[in-house]
Image 1 (cartoon, rainbow, N blue to C red):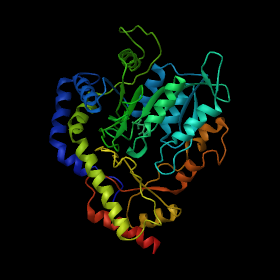
Image 2 (image 1 turned 45 degrees about the vertical axis):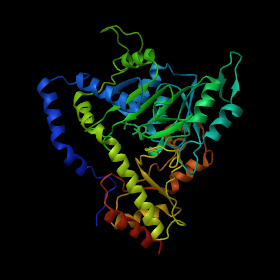
Image 3 (image 1 turned 120 degrees about the horizontal axis):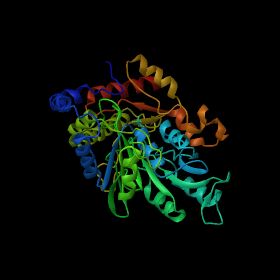
Image 4 (image 1 turned 60 degrees about the vertical axis):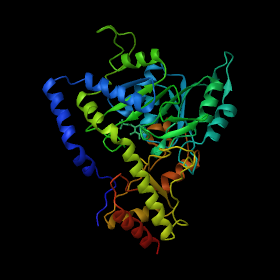
Length: 395
Ligand SMILES: *Cc1c(COP(=O)(O)O)cnc(C)c1O
């Protein structure tokens, strides 16, 4: 039996007609960039997330870049983030000239450890005469970028507390977490809406995927939203007058139109993904594998949240990861490693002078974790085959 890591065919088949109609409409109007479809989709995301402002951009990477540029982050600034994320999180910090500062992850959630974050800011950094916070190397700490990895929100309450204490901006990298919820001071908040700004990706394999690249920024402040809108078009306002340097971060009408068709289904897809996760747990328990394999944690399951986890990825942990992966490949089961290197181990960040052991839990996750097939339409039969194949490996 062949079980791919991700199969978008059923989802597309179910929506092919309205999607084609939307694409036809854009083609017939020849309004290709930043038109009514983008505006409608921005309004739909703002409404879905419960955020006052949403700005459509060209990708999740450009969403981060546009926010960092609009905040004026640059040389001499430090931006604190997780040592274990997709490259864009660290890459965009470096691209604006700021210094990425990594924090090790919590081995249970794979999100950065808020204890380590607090310890770093409160103990390793020092206050400058003007009250600003300096890293040991002398960069000014300006922002924290929590990453809601695999569809599970970071513990945002301590993040927001420490950010307020030191006057730092908070930019949530919610590329993998559109719709994921967190209980913040007694109310339910969606990923991306808790900090100063949040960024989303609609890369085709994300939970809400475009037919190409697309992204979104949500934010609280109107003046900042306007600045991001200008940043999306080379810092231009009015036409051909440039107040600061931005980029071409525009969103296409065709992508926005397609995403607009799919968004109303996102919550049912996330619920189906949780169903898939529940079935995996049942099967792993049934075959007595939970002493060999660590299943994803669900720390917010009992918090009264619906989208307590949206399972962008279903990631297990085992010390025999590479051999298991080869075994599953022979059984025609698709798996992936997110990510084989922690950010501080990447060659391009060698200039930061980190060494092995600096972030042990991130390094261990890079060695031990494996993503199993996960998509809303994954059948129980396919899941049984996956887990039975894993049992065969350990037998
Ligand atoms: C996918 C992703 C991004 C980048 O999104 P793109 O749309 O591919 O540019 C950024 N951060 C994280 C955590 C991601 O998973």
